Image (cartoon, rainbow over the protein chains, first blue to last red):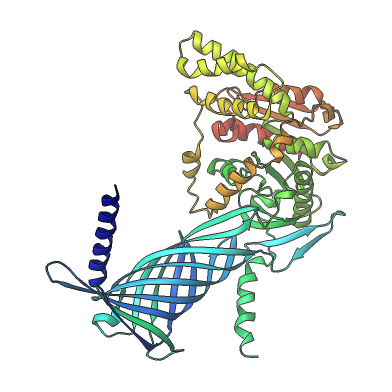
Length: 218
Length: 346
């Protein structure tokens, strides 16, 4: 039994040493520009728009070497985002919401990308019709700018293409599926699926920040 | 200053849909909201507002929606003559709010209904004639409304369609109908495998029903009408045939509101609520409609209302092919009876 324990410890140590030996990290600080995004958002047929900014946090350049010796390069970017969004659902409500998020983007060397972005925010709806109040004596008044504030959580994932990788154009196109959750909505939650199609502009120097970049070979 | 201008512009764009618009015409469609005690309730008025006669749907549930009644058939056969008001009660359909569950109770909803009627009269004229139609739980809500203070003076007629005004009596009648019809069906060797568990349940639960027993009877009653081929089946799929996208239904709001309200604690209070003992105060003309195959709110409820209200201007009509949703399952019969009732009392 004791021999088995020693054996397992040794195997674990040697395996992890082997794994670590396969990756080499180099860390540097680089100045990176923030990005601007503009997109059309839609829930079924109901239109909307979204404006955002992405602040870079870090970038990891990864090179993967397969057993056959073939190299695969891709980049993992992390951003803090701030967004202003709006959609219009006739006769139901207009919803304006601000959100802050954490975007994880993985871009292959030829430009294809995938991303995942959780967000939290605050929503203000405007009801889709004149809103009245009736007092106990039956007197009627109109309530101006009727609507509600809601806390908002959104999770989204999507795909896109970064034109700066191969074609040296400073933008990327993307399409995302987001699920909005607003609460407390009538003492429960409100869910809304939102499809987003947009463009992210990557200026050379706009609100540039010093971020940590890592290069890693696996 | 110039930074404020876009926000002012945005504010006006967002609130432009809230500008008051009141249309008197023959083919009107307009949505507005009533804000009352934590809820903003959606009201859709469609049809002929120039008739100054309004049929107000009080939907079932609690937590269902008036969107489901807005069918092409009703549009073509009632809205062409009168205006129809589709009201989503609090925590239902397209109605909105924050943490308002504490206000979800029958007295509050009765007050909401009164304010809905006052609002319709404010918008379309104090002389407007209003007929209220309670379906299912809407029967309980309209019974509460009609027996509270002098509310009934606000309406010209009360239509009670597959409604319930007395939940304990409802449970007793549902059990009795399941038991009787179940035995008949087994004797005819029809759907025996489905009726036997229902009969067994009825044998084991004979009265003084708990909330859980009441829910189980409701579940059996909902299924029972589907065992008859002549009864048109109504389920989520058939409702989705109405093309909710085209008509702008807030689908997730409808579903999540329904889930919340149908499970809300006030349903336990409703289970012991009855208005039979108060119906003697009702002197308003009343039309009572029910489907022969309605196990959820059996016809005995309409007969109880008929016998207790204090007016001679009352009628019961029975659809021979309908279950619990008479306005969807026997549209021709429903529209004919409703139109005739309104015509003679407007």
